Every structure is written in C-alpha cells, then in structure tokens.
Image 1: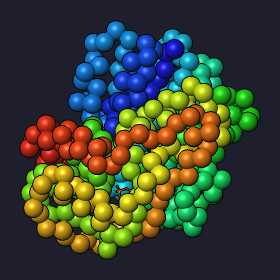
Image 2 (image 1 turned 60 degrees about the vertical axis):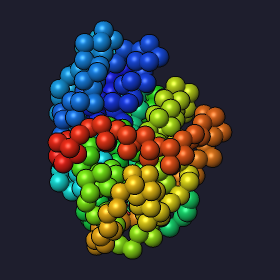
Image 3 (image 1 turned 90 degrees about the horizontal axis):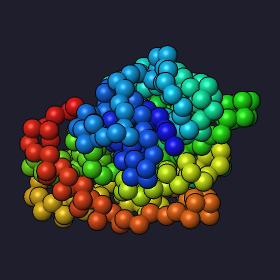
Length: 317
Ligand code: UDP
C-alpha cells in the first residue's frame, strides 16, 4: 500500500509512519511543523519507502501518484497547544479534514480520521461507549478542538454515506510515550519533565480528576488494526485502566526518584472530571486490547526524556 499520513512529524503520526513502513508499505508524510518536530522523523529521511512533504493540509493539497490510504493525524492536540493556536486547530479539523477527504475520494483511497475522546467533552456517561453523544461546551476554550473534531467526524460520515468512501474514525484517548514534546503541556510529559528538571509537579485542581493513559505502542497497534480491518463506525482506542491525576504524580515521583514538591494550580476551564474508554467494540472487532501497564510505559517515557538532554527538555518547541 501507499498511504498519506498528515501530521507525520507529530507524536502519533511519526509512530504511525514507523508502523506502516515496518510492514513494508510506502508512506508519504506531511506536516507543517506547527506542533510536530523534525526530530521525530529524522530517522526516516532518506529511506526509500518514505517521502516527506512540508505542507499545511488546511490549504489545497495535491499528492502525485496512487494512494491506498489517507490518514489524517494533523492537529494541535494538547490543551495548551490548541489554546495557543485556536484558529489553526479549527481549520485543520474542518478545512484540513475536507481537503484530506477530497484527496482520498479523488484517489479512491481509504480515509482514516484521528478523532478524540474530547468529542465526549466532560462526560455524563462513564465509561464512555461510542454510542454516547457527549457533553461539550462549544464556546469554551476547548471548543476549538472538540467542535473541530466533531465536525470532522460528521464530514467523514457524510463522505462515507454520500460518496460511498471507505472511512474509519478512531476516538483516541490520552496517549503517552516517546516523541511527546517535552513542554507540550500534557500531564504525562509535564510531570516527567518537571521531575527530571527538579521543578515542582503542577497538579491542576485537587488532582481527583481521572484519565486513562494508553502507551503509544498499544495505541498505534489499535489504530493500525482499525485501518486494516475495521468498519466506518467510530471506534474508541485507549487504555481502560483509570487513574487520578494525583496517582499519576505519585507514579512519576516514584519512578524518577525525584524529590520535588507538588504545586497546586487552578483547574483549566471545562477540564473533564473523568475519562475512561469503553473498548468492548475494539476487543470484539479487532481482537485488540492494551498490553503495556502504566508503570512500564511511564518508565520507558522517562528513559526517552532523560536521553533528550537539558536543552530540549526546557524548550516549548
Ligand atoms: N494536568 C495537571 N497538571 C499538568 C497538566 C495537566 O494536573 O501539569 C491535568 C489536567 O487538568 C487534566 C489532566 O491532567 O485534568 C490531563 O490533562 P492533559 O493536558 O494531559 O489532557 P486532557 O486529557 O485534559 O486533554
């Protein structure tokens, strides 16, 4: 197969490039480096089955040659990133998805949308099955991401129903691991980087809010299987083991051995109180479930950040 992956220099996009290349496929990677980083794909540059194009998918996009798949992973994805880039976030979910769908239709390629557990907002149903419609504030600061992804899902389903395009929609829950940007603001990277830098661990609110953290290799395996053998209905891919933010801080302190204080900060607006995927559908259809426990995944992520060195640990980019 020859596939296009948007957001190829991002955290998930770059791992996905690796996964397709490992199975012998050809990959065209596309990124505009708003939040992606060249280091994530440096090992792929020069490989014969990998091509890279620096381009913004929210503008008109043409890719020469046949494509069997278009996987749309481009978007700022951490809360502070989409607060910093609210309009590019809305555009890549809306215009970028439309361009990627149009390209897939033109090439008769399978289209794969990276959606998010944020479509459930601050959920009133717990854990969240795919049938839950969500509780989203459209005009709050997170609305730029949540509504763009909800629009993207609606647009994808419209192409599926109206144009009979072969489509997939994955709802990705909190994922962590190597190649996260050190200062991207997400909780796992923040806590590890703070611990390694000898800075206080910043807990927002009282730390009783929960998330369910999936290690990147598990997430990418679920995504790959969904692409290859799933159907067009949305699919949750995430780890159902749920932790409070405070418990995560304890795991990071324990595994780094850091002796840093905990600093309380205000809870961001509309921060979901709980989040846990119901993965019944993924288990049944894909025979998939996560294999990496939190402590193992956090230990591997600590190794990655340690190896990055002080200069990149301090940088936002
Ligand atoms: N959080 C925190 N300290 C941090 C960063 C995040 O306590 O330094 C909390 C945040 O308020 C949220 C959870 O951790 O409840 C997960 O935040 P993240 O930004 O990773 O992603 P989200 O799941 O909210 O999209």
